[in-house]
Length: 76
Image (cartoon, rainbow, N blue to C red; front, side, top):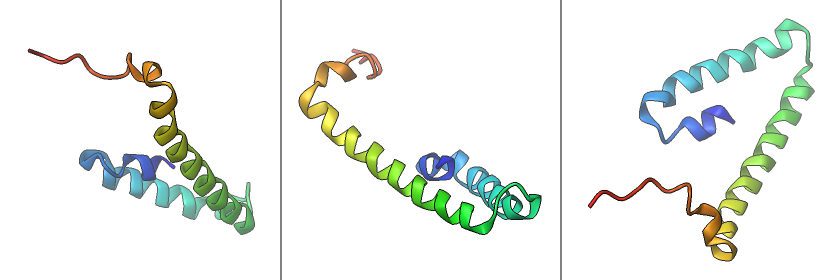
């Protein structure tokens, strides 16, 4: 998920992807998880990304004031 959300940031894109790939390869080798655990992790990550994107689209429609503190101040 870090690689997914770091992708728009050009300076983090490739380091995050490289680190994620190393972790992915090391997971079954390390012995703490099996390949099926990694595959299930893909499914959970995909569901989490889909839900987060859906919520991010819905919240401003119903509660725009919830995002008022998140916007950077406008310089005039």
